[in-house]
Image (cartoon, rainbow, N blue to C red; front, side):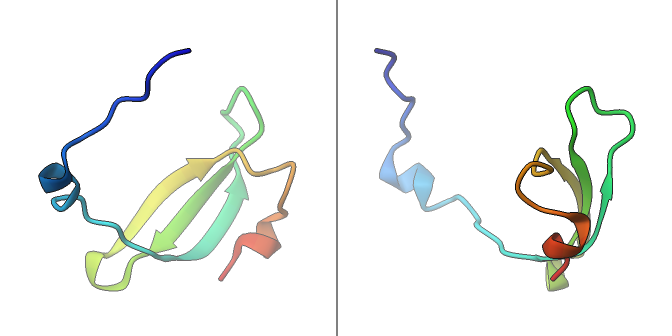
Length: 65
């Protein structure tokens, strides 16, 4: 069994975790496996674009908000 890589606690304290709100979700036509392109609003951090393979579990409208 492979061991997971771990970091020291002091390095963990440097990690910034942010939550955001999905404002737009659309199918990614260029993806080899079905996925969505997501626009995520992180408020003071701004809006970022990401992608996720969530098509089997969620529709575009379910992801908004």
